[in-house]
Length: 346
Ligand code: SF4
Image 1 (cartoon, rainbow, N blue to C red):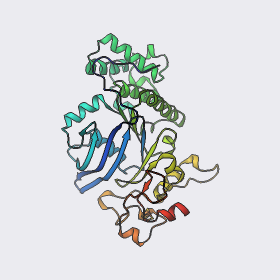
Image 2: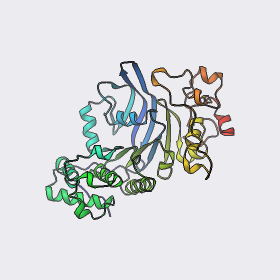
Image 3: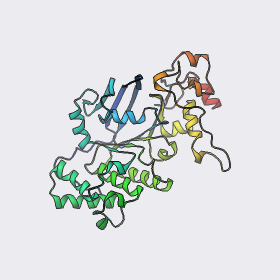
Image 4: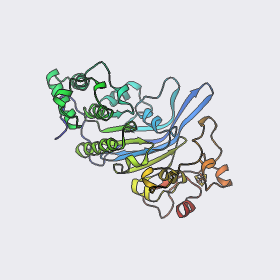
């Protein structure tokens, strides 16, 4: 089954491998009563059509702030982009009026949020909420819009969709609500889909089903995807690239297999060691010691040094730049002074 073609001005289909989004040296700050927080500090990555980029890290690493900056959803008035560019279709979203970004986000860039219950309107039937997208954005007549909504609900695997289309959000399970959010997100055939912890509230089996659904939809539409997660296991099978974030910076980036098989940053190694499925039966989980840093008082040098088993005096004094050491796979880069030792002994 294919995703229905909406009437009106659908966004043009992206060419395979077309560069959709280029985030360049992005810097975001928040003004708080305790001072200015640098939430993103020089974040750069690209997303191409048909590609899935996973942005990974613990809470507070800057993953969601990255998505909020792209979608012009930074909390106001505290959050602001203070440097860098977000290039999408020739437009710098970092410098464009919010109205322009919101218009693009309504038609070409879609987002799936962590909590579908708070994202869906509790007093409207799910069919009406999906149909409204076609009616408002494409001028689709009501009856046709409901037919498209039904097709979408079937596409995302809602059982007995002909009946359930008239149900309210609270009448669905958590997994079904997330599927409905996905249906709404893909309704207007976005070129780019951003999932911010889209499976966090779901059990492991449903998590995998939702990830498989997103991968199927991507294969069908050629859209680019950004998947944000704290769980490296969840995105392992669907992502093409990984960007590991810590304290507002990307500390390792590369092809997903390269990053997972040859993690070159102690933080990436720690995250991978924390995945339950990477731990043999009977073995204790191996979490990273310590906590993410307070962004108002970042440690000197490499901000990971208080938690890092490889830390030396140099690490405490100098912040490592993201670099591509000789002999690494193409596009694999890491921000660590001791990458070679980490690769050998980690
Ligand atoms: Fe650890 Fe030093 Fe590398 Fe930072 S630069 S991750 S402290 S070894």
